Length: 141
Length: 382
Ligand SMILES: [Zn+2]
Image 1 (cartoon, protein in one colour):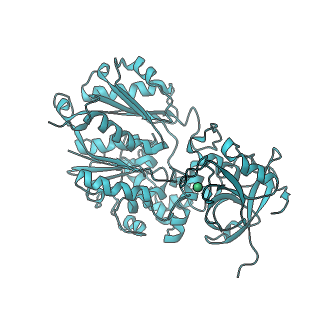
Image 2 (cartoon, rainbow over the protein chains, first blue to last red):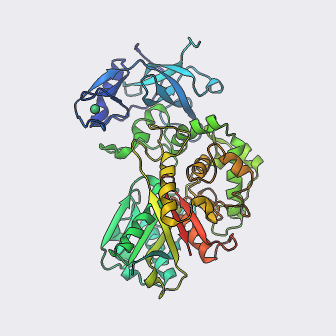
Image 3 (cartoon, helix red, strand yellow):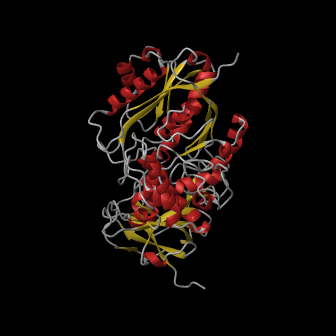
């Protein structure tokens, strides 16, 4: 999934017991989702129990990191905390069917459109952690 | 004979940018005002309902109001949705026979003491369903306005809504507020040009005039039985129906993990049950008090609560149906955008005033009012 890029100051993630696996994977440059070991379904946001089979056994499943933009927002006022330039946060529908909010990078706000394909990579945070970021894919057919 | 719940009293402080006193004092003042309005001794309060986000403890509100013995207390989740869900609980508490005098309050110094609209990062280890922090904050979506746009952007884009469409909602609400002396924006109407010229809060959808303003103030309701209200001061306002629907994998503001994002699944579920319970549909009521923290919320709720068909809300607005002289006037107090943002509760006091016939912008012969906060709806009547 690639190395962690340094794209300037970003806030650190908020890490909880039930989501730590996700952020640990980010530090390794892996984009993952919770997979239920009982029924193999994927879930995001993470949760302690599978709502279908009620198993609490879970693992981290690697995702393709490909998705499309469903909506996006660029906060102007007040400025977003921890960012040097106004970030663009987007709701992304991942190839695997999960939805995930991430930051769009390397894109002009005016060129963003709903349905635009994107691919994940990782950026460093101010505290040395890593978070997923998404950039438009070049191979749009 | 069955007990029927009514709203017998309403109370509110002034709305401002700096109340100059504690939230506990605002709570005590608005609760006491609601009792005085009803003609009921605050010592007789036997149930208390507020928002999970409210900072005033029941013990403290009792110490100031003198309430002697509570039989029921509950603090409600899901942000401003609690404005309408509070009445679901009050109705049940009264009609079940558990309580005779339930107060509901929301008191906040969200402007002077803390800034509700600024970046949030507090998160408890058990998260409290706050994906809007955990799964939004690190990516730059850190305020209610940003979460709102991530939630509504798919709808706005799919339907082809324009910022002018949103601006028309702001104009309606500010025009109403301009003739409501209780409103923070009293005597300050705006035009669509003002809306279009106002600065961006979050691109590409919300300008300053699409957003409610943080406000200080307190608002309270007193709910009792119809029978008891006969001996009180005010014309009672009946709660014809009050319903809510929290559906799987949905949440209040970062509500984009489930289903078709162009529809409000929760609101659609509420509409069916509420229409059956009240015997009247939201669109058939005389006044539409629809939660308007941001303008897109009004569009999506118009469709979710059945005022118009899928994708038709922008035209419903443009055709004038929400104007004060329209088919279903929208929040004649100016709503949360124009009057104040006391987390939706000030829309309730306006709904009651409309039915008493005492509102600043009185809708002629209002018999029924629809109260909406996304996942919840209530129909009030006389
Ligand atoms: Zn499972």
